[in-house]
Image (cartoon, rainbow, N blue to C red; front, side, top):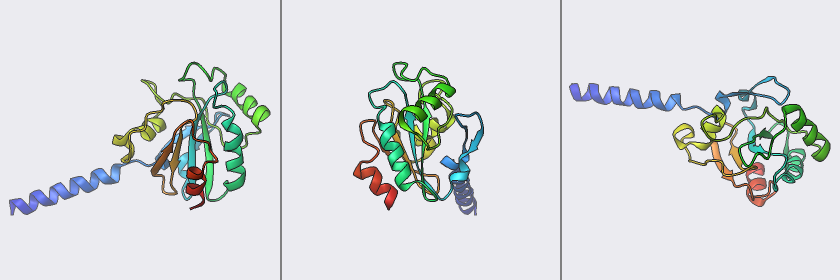
Length: 179
C-alpha cells in the first residue's frame, strides 16, 4: 500500500511540475509606446522573436523582417522586435528614437517592444525563458549577438532558433512560417 501511495504522490508531483511550465503566452511585455502587451493575445499564431539594434552590421535585416511580416503576417504569424543594448552599445537610443529610426529607415510595421536586456543579471523575464532550457523545456540558447531569432509555435512553445547571421527570409524560417 505504501508503494502505491508513493507512486501516486510521485506521479502527482511530476504532473504538477509539468503543468507549471510556462509558455511564451504567459508573459506580458511593454510595447515601444509604453503599453502593456500580454503575449497571450498571440495564441494561435507563430511568432518570430528578434532582439534588434539600430547600429549593428545586421541592422539591414529590418528590411527582410518587414518583408517576412508583410508577406506572411496576419492571423497565423507575426514578428516581434525587442530592441536591446547588450552588444557593444549598438542600441543606445530611447524607445522614441528607436521607433522613429525603424519607421523612417526601414518602414517597420511589425510590433516593436520596449528596449530590454537580453542577457546578464538584468535579463528580461521573457528572454530568460527563451534562452534557458530549464525555463522553456527545449533548449539553452543564450543570445550571442543582435538579431538572433526565436521561433515560437501557435501554442507558445519554443520550437527553434536562428542565429544572427541567418537572414529572416532564409528557407529555414520561411518554411517554418509556411508549414
